[in-house]
Length: 285
Image (cartoon, rainbow, N blue to C red; front, top):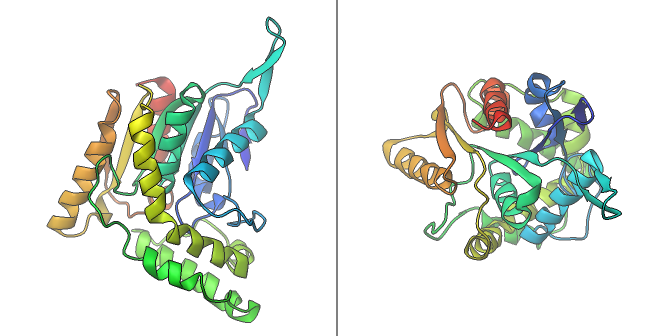
């Protein structure tokens, strides 16, 4: 989904686990225009995207981001060398687990990245302790079972979405219509793709850690947005704030910003805070 003036600086919006491109609709309304062209997308097998036989993994996610940028923004031809060159570098915005995707992409393709905005990112900074996601082993077990029949999926998928919004949003705001939620989350293949992403989380973090050792992060503006209402108790708050501070320190131009009035689903609760961070990165401040 692309909005804005062609030729404007691109802003690529990557949703978190269990999300879809319509999660960014409120942010897009604030950003799209003469100053930026926003690009939101669904990863393979999720949202409106077709089912895929390629399992989730860091290499796939980097390739997907590369392909989305190519398709949505395109490339130009350098007449001096007679070959195509990449378009204007993009601001990459990643929510939750997608923060790992866009960080990795910036390390592999630094010339295509203008800056990064990590929206309440997964708490996996360089050198993070293990174990990680306690739900990943359960997801791996679920992958060994058959997909839910269509009749069950039509109830289960939208119900899971409602629970996700209720638990993750401080305002309880849903960014999609009831019909959009039913169309996407009633598909058994979408439910299976979401379970597969969860099952692959631990390996994803291992691959990102390996990449951090091999490729430096470009010295671009980096804003880490922390949802204040998702901090929980004192112990959990210290862990999240410490992890987000460490992520911000990956760039000498990095900073962490605490966003009040927002749960984990910040694009729904505080789209203005996300849009402001993107504008600051676009301005290089």
